[in-house]
Image 1: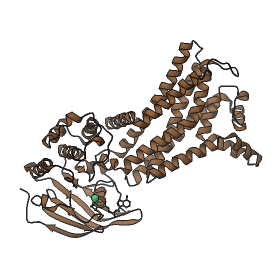
Image 2 (image 1 turned 90 degrees about the horizontal axis):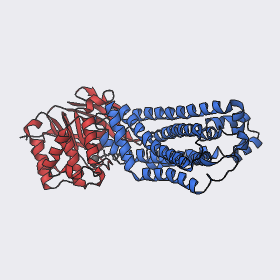
Image 3 (image 1 turned 180 degrees about the vertical axis):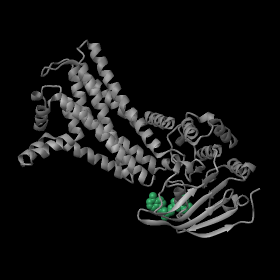
Image 4 (image 1 turned 45 degrees about the vertical axis):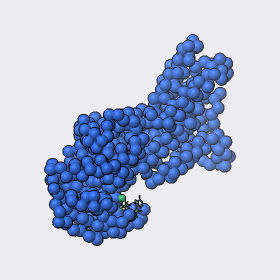
Length: 275
Length: 218
Ligand SMILES: Nc1ncnc2c1ncn2[C@@H]1O[C@H](COP(=O)(O)OP(=O)(O)OP(=O)(O)O)[C@@H](O)[C@H]1O
Ligand SMILES: [Mg+2]
């Protein structure tokens, strides 16, 4: 166990010092600042104001950029370590493969969570400073949502890293998966599918199984579905399952996908050549 | 003792090693020779459990790499052909080596000092930012600080300065090394001539020469 924490800690600090991490942390913190400076917290649009509006915009941005950030940084760093023979040296030590793999997962997870947590705290600080009412329920939900979806994309990232044999391929796969998931939340596309008489069930399944869409639906589930910018699927789902049901489903589904891909990644890592 | 039986290994569909059978006894000092691309590094990676053989068995001290990787690796210290761009600081690398490789950090620092390198002066520097020779000295120091039975050096002295080479020869020739197994991969025969007790040559993934030399270690 102490070996696992050593590996997690070393990976954490290594990432912490890296350029990608600084960029990643800066993007999410600056996002909060930018939303704040744009004045949305002042105006009252569609009944929301202050921190609630800031959080709503922040989470929608995260919905799109968090996956790509996590996927790209994960696959680049892991595949690079393998390609540049860092693994050749580090794995020549008597470390159980499970310890090494899960230690790295833990380190990455913490490194990815930290800036998101700081961004939410920054938003909270802005809200408190402005004296606006603090939407605690929303804050807790968004914290959980970001934590769970980080796990999802970290899992997919690890899986891609260990199953591809080169950095370029891994990066290409990551971009492709992101584009695919983003394309499938597109309202126009869903509308098109409906027009093309694609069975409704298939469209709902596409929405329910797409982690980006799941995230999106959960993010707006607390608000009145009628006035949000959601497609017909989200509307239907909210209507059927209710907001609590949707949120519970989303959080557990995101975690499930994360663990599923992490575990599949581990199996591939164990079975194949390590280099 | 290292036991390799009927080892075959392909990479990207190309056969790199075929039918390698070798038995290396405790205390042997083996030099692997062979042209560039002969398969030496590939063989070492099989020995470290990093490549899974297509068929055949590899074991160290009776522990098969396939099923008892950790037990086998506990007894092996390895220095790679090219020091990899590890992003740990020196302190972190030492922490990894001591926690995972079970050796003392003081011992590593002591050994690197012996190689003319003051690790403390660079302890917060990232390993990959050290010079090629410094990296090699650090990895060699880590290897010598571990309590193992087998040392594997893939081109150990390629980047070392004169002091480094002398010290390396001294450490290899030290009395406490007499019962340790050492595998060298090197293209410079003359350097290790008076240590090596056996020469194995690979060509196109096969053993083409296996001779015990007359000289025995001092
Ligand atoms: N990952 C890989 N995928 C495909 N082929 C590989 C891979 N790694 C090595 N090879 C091939 O395997 C052969 C043996 O390579 P290896 O690195 O074992 O040679 P070597 O004997 O260590 O050579 P050198 O003296 O140059 O270090 C080479 O032909 C090389 O091109
Ligand atoms: Mg080589």
